[in-house]
Amino acid sequence: MSTLDAVPATYSFPASFDHERLSEEFVDYLIALRRHLHRNPEIGFEEYATSRLVRAHLESHGLQVSGPHAKTGLYVDIDGEHSGPHIGFRCDLDALQLQDAKHVAYASRNTGVAHACGHDVHTAVGIGVALNLFQLRHRLRGRVRILFQPNEEGNPSGSIPMIEAGVCEPLEALYCVHVDPTLDVGQFGIPEGQVTASSDRLRVEVTAPSTGHSARPHNVKDTVWIATQLLNQYYQFIGRVTDPRNPAVFTVCVLEAGLAHNVIPAKVSFEGTLRSLNDNDRVFLVSYMQRAADNFTQLHGVKIELINRGGLPAVVNDPKLCQIVRTCVHHLFGKDASLDICVPSMGAEDFANYLLHVPGMLIRVGTRGSTATGYPLHDALFDVDERALSHSVRLMTRVLMYHTESAFSKKTEQASTEDV
Image (cartoon, rainbow, N blue to C red; front, side, top):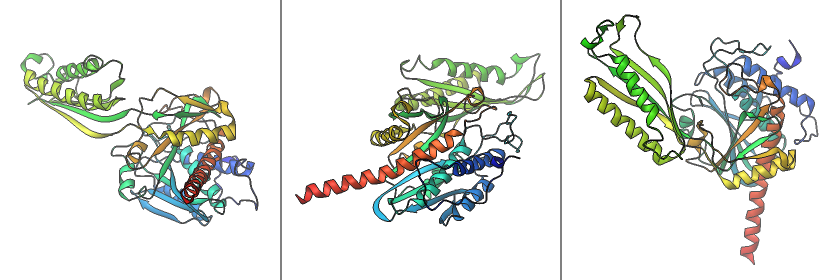
């Protein structure tokens, strides 16, 4: 096992350090944390070992950790020695239910669970930023809260119980990062305005009075045929009943039917997500799907239920926070490192729930350095160029410091103007 595969119990900061140029030892520490998390992934609301690791590494440096919240969630406040705003940085803890297919020393040890969306990176970055800011508290203005949230991938979202626990009530702004394998390592995507689509998790259940023989489908209600006809209608109406200039997509990822090759099942169900970039289309499409299900019920004489298991609004970045991030990227990495992203992703992020309460900004962090680190999110071979860890810690430390300093400067300038 290499030294980067063993998680150090703690990291000792030197008497003086440059938070914008992390030491090799601190970078190795971040990589070791990430690899440990990658080897030991946990699904949503079951991130107990992950939560304990976060707490241990923060408390070993004297930080006071609050939690658990929402079963496994935590947060830590770094209080500056000067007055200023209260802002936050949110990280997520959970992994995905899929089998890691990589052949690396830090591949997942947990069968059927893998960090294929980069939340191991986000967690390690959150620890790194918290430790960095704690060392800089003599310069920090106000308070920075680092959130470690469970179950970003799941439904219901882990952001909801975290919000209900009051974690964002004192915050004036909230940031988060997300790894992006479509961007080269060292690049940062800055989407102004809408970042993601909304998402609704929908399940359809088609139920008949009884099963039937496959040789005589005309004597029973052929639930498989009825369900697939309805599914096909759902796939076809987007862009016909909505403006085709407004992107939307419905994708089924779960199909459940019978157990025998010659028995027509009494129940067939399918489940997927409806995603839209337009709020009016989102409401209309769910309503249209319900009407289509009702029509099929009357036409075929079966029971059809459309179950909306909840969803997420779109992530919309605050333009002022985008400018803060852009300024910090240019300062640390040069102007070529920032990329304006003009086309929203059709993916979804439960960071959107926080933005119903506080202005926020989602930053895309480039993680592609080779073919091995270019696989898409949620791919069984997904991996990152680990240089993204230090880049992210440097950037977010700078962003959070700069935000508090610029907010203080604006208040001072405003006070001076009022005095005159």
